[in-house]
Length: 124
Length: 495
Image 1 (cartoon, rainbow over the protein chains, first blue to last red):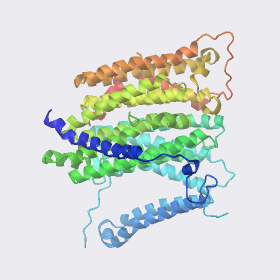
Image 2: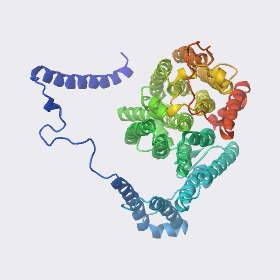
Image 3: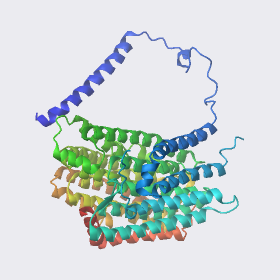
């Protein structure tokens, strides 16, 4: 076996050891544990309330609000360092440093305008 | 006071991406301010077409600049402007234009609401692909991958009243997000090993230093490969392909098969050839395995398909294997052959899916058995489908033959004879299942057989006819006079 393939041997050993460990523990459990199947044991919440229906209770509208929140959150992440460094940036690049951030904000605002027009901000 | 070294912005080199994003934003703005009664799809289509045309114009201007002045990079070496990025950009823009032409007839025929967002999403996705083609930094590769993928997730689920389309969107989203995470992990490990995310920087670091423990870098390289192999649908990361290709609207599938593959291979080739040439012995072995598995998985999987779109999905997996043969060779000739293949495959697959759009079929299902006696009922479309399938099988004098010849000769030049043999054998298997479809179409009907009813025959309008004519013309043209595309690809892979 060449040195080249010997380097990959560690990966093979790791994979083998992982399989043996997981398989061994699950297999041992299978051998040792008693099995007395009952229908109740297969219910999702065995000891809790009976499951009713299949769907969660959360309103899908929250999702859009969360998306809009993330949008402005990320916007703030970019604006803060820019605002702190605005003076040296302006000294060096003049008005371009301002314009580039305005472009960024305009693009994000466009998303908000679009969402507004689509009516996602109205809770009805 | 911290001195900030801001990058020089070469607007010219990023003009195509900026144009596409701007066109998409104009469409969104237009939709937001337009009154509810106003028809918005047609103006959006117009804006989108103009945006794509202007992008194509910028690409040709860039080409003349690059031919004269050589490759450059911009934005602090984040994006590259070279022949390679322009070539892939051309494939993407052409695919997007053909896809939009295909969509109008399809959406009307299927009774899907035509929304301006559809056009905007295509433009955003194409912008991500162009960004990917010129990505010269692993971070840009990742951002571009997200920009191109997220609109595709939405487009795959665009026909949202149909469960299969939704299923395709969700599957593509979940698995795509997972593969993006894998790619990002690869970026992190590569950065950890080399201390930079710049592709050129990685190469400089590796040529100046010898890593005493190269495990981190190798793990990073493998994860990068996995993330991109998912996008180009290479076995064993292909599980999503048949379901998504089958469920997504047919024009979207055509776009995914042509443009996404081109963008994914662009990033793959650039990462391997620019950043990791010192490790070519390692990645050539990995690509060897990927190519063999894709060739076998694609062609053998296609044997058992009963649906035309699923068959084309498996054939697309097989074609990813052929392109991987070219990439695997590790030579300039190999890159050139991969580029030729991507160019040719875009036309062959969009043409095939254009026929699928024209077929109609209830609930967008296209059982191959429904094609029986199709050769008599709609002779022109049947002939076109037969033509595109023969081209994909690689029959001369079509472009498919030229593409296969290019990758095989690149493999032979790189002494990858094992791959060559696998490639030729799978070509024969592939020819079998393509011919099976063709024979089904032209088979004589049994006397007691009921002819399947076309419940929604799609009238072939001008846009759809244009797509078919363009694809046929390009497939024959490249097949008969291949030198133009081959020279274009050679120039593109050299500079």
